[in-house]
Image: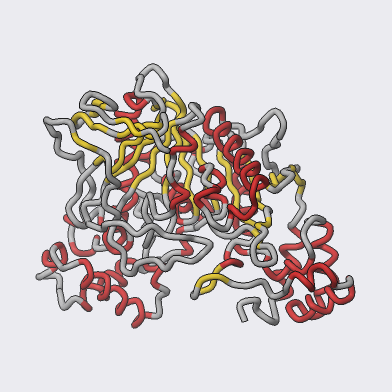
Length: 515
C-alpha cells in the first residue's frame, strides 16, 4: 500500500512565481503540472503570472495538442492525457526540499519527434524511482509541438519572429525556471544533466546549438536521438505558406491564424504536406536562423561553447524491429528454428534476407554478438546505430570533454525473444521495468540490468563519468571505439559491430522482415 502524505504546510515549496504544494508518495515528493512559462500562439514564452495562494500541484498538467492520438502497442503503452495549448508545465520528483541538499538534476525531454508525445506519455517515464535513490532530482517537461511549436511564419512579419522555434524556446524557458527554482526542491542548479530519447535526444542536440542555452545545463545524454537538422524540412517558409493558403488566409488576414481552432490548423497542414509530398513527421523541427538556433554540428560543427560538455550517446540493438504501423511484429522465425536449426540451415534462412551476403553476415554476427543467434541479423538496427557512431566519432575528435557510447543488446524473453527496441531503454533507466509488461517478462535479469543502467546514468549525472566500480566504462575515442553493451552481462566492446553494420547495409535486405 502506498504511503501518501499531503498537508496544508507540507510538502510546500516557494518558487519565483508563488508557492506550490505537492504530494509525498512513498518518501518521494512529486510536484505535477507546475507552470514554468506561458505563451500566446506562435509567440515566444514569457514567465507565468504570479499567484498569491499556495498552488496545488497534484495533477499532471496539460499535454500539447497533437494531430492524432498515438497508437499504443504492446511494446509502447501510451497514457493519454488532457490536451490544451496551455501546456507549458513541468513535473519534479525529489526526496528533499532542503535548499542545502544540492543534488544533481536530471532534466528529461520526451520523444515523439517534434510532433507528438508528452512528459508522461509512457508509464515508464515517471521519475520517482530515480529520485528514490536519494542521489538526483528529476524534472520532466511539456512544451509546444508540431505546428504550434515549429511553423515558420517568419515571412509574415516581425510579430512571428519566434514561430519557427517556439517549441525549443519553451524548453529554454523550462531550463531557466530550473536554474531559478530547483535549489528549493533540493537540486543543484550548477549540475544539470539533459536526457531524452528519440525526439527528446534530437532536441538536446538542438539545445547544444542554441547560444541562449549555454550555462543552463552541464551534461547531456542522447538516447536513440541523433537527428540532424538537415534531415528535417529545409523549406519551412514555403511549407508555412502552403498551410496559410490551405486555411484560406493571406498576408492581409494572417492574424486570424492565431485563433484558428487547432484541429483546423493541423488538418490544413496535413493537406499541404500531402500535396507537396512531405512526410508529415518531417514537417516539424527546429529551423536554424542564426539567432535562436545555429545549424547542426554536421554543417556548422560543434560550437566552442559546448565542447566542454560531457556527452553520453546510445541506442538499442533492435530499434524499430518491434514495430510496424499496426503494432507488434513477430520475428521471422520460431523457437523451434532457433533451437534446432543446424548452421547450414541458418545460413539458408539468412539467404532469404541477404542473398549471397548471408555467409559473411552470419560470420560477422557470431564475432560481434556470440551470445545472439545469427538468425536475428535481419532485425539488427543499422540506421540509428550508424548515425550514432558517426556522431560520437565526430564528437570525440572535436570536443574537450569525454563522450561515452552505449548499445542496449538485451533480448527480452517474449515471442521467441525480442531484441531491445526503440524506447526499451526508457523503463530501464527510470527503474520502471515493472511498469512495462514486456520488459517484466525478463524477471530478475531485467531488474538487474535496470539497476546497472540506472547506476550508470546517475553516475554520469553526478560526475560526468558513467563508470561504476564493478563496471568500468572507457570513453569513446577515434583510436579506441569503445561501446558499453548493456545486457545480462554488460561489457565494454571495442569497435565490435562496424563491419557487421556495413555488411548488412551493403546487402540491402532482399526480403523485409515486416513481410
